Structure formats: C-alpha cells, structure tokens
Image (cartoon, rainbow, N blue to C red):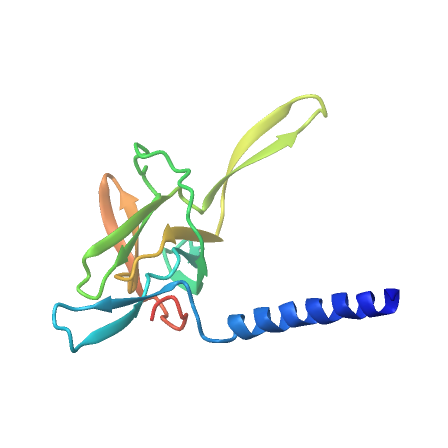
Length: 179
C-alpha cells in the first residue's frame, strides 16, 4: 500500500515537472508584446525595450596627450551617479563626450586629470603625508548609462577654461545591446 502511494507521488511530481518544462519551452515569452497598428490587417511584433545598459570605456593617456581607447564593454544594469552635478573641470582635467552619428552630444563625463595622482605616505610611522605625483602615462575608465544614440567618444582636455580635442573614437558596436 505504501509503495503504491510512493509511486503516485513520484508520477505526479514527474508529470508536474513535464508540464512546467513544456510550457517554458513553448515559446511563450511574457516580455514580448504584440502591438497592433490602426489598420486591422497589419500587426507588428515588437519586443519591449531591452533592459538598461552601462557603457564602459577604458582609455590610456600619456603626458604628451596621446590617448588610446583600450576597449569598450556594454553590460546590463543601471548606473548609480556618484559625481556631483556642480563639479567644474580644472586645468588638465578631461571631458569625455559621447556623441551620436551626427556628432551631437548624448552624454558627457568629467574625469579629473588621470596623470596627476595624490599619494599618501608616512615618514616617521606616526603621521601620514600627501604628495601629488605626476605620471608619464595612466589608464582611466568612464562609465555612462547606455543610450542607443551613442556611436563616438571624444576626449577633450581643459586648458585655461578652454577645451582642446585630443581624439575622437568610434565606439565598437559588436554587443547585442546595440542592435
């Protein structure tokens, strides 16, 4: 009697799992919507917008203002802004402008001069001191919330309240979030 009830439980569990798997593989996708136009004979099947993305750009700069785009990556997620809105670029700082195909501004980021670093050290093992160090080259990263208009990254240096364009890069579009 107990063996048969055990078999019933196993068969019921197996049946429920089988139904669950067949429903999940049936092509039903709750994130898709069917949108009908005003005309009754045309239907367009459109996906909802992809989840938000973060564009990560990694650069290297040298003391002679040579800039290289090392790589770029597009990942899913929302960017939490940490930079104060009122931060004004100082002499030597960089401004990274993200542009569309018409070279119109999509987004902009301020990067403090990556060639100037503040180093903390101790001379007598009791007090810390700070020293500003000038580097010959440095790597830095820029993260922006992805927008479909983003195609170029322009690096500018601030010099006496003016900006000098150092380089403009094509942002590679090999990631599926771009399509």
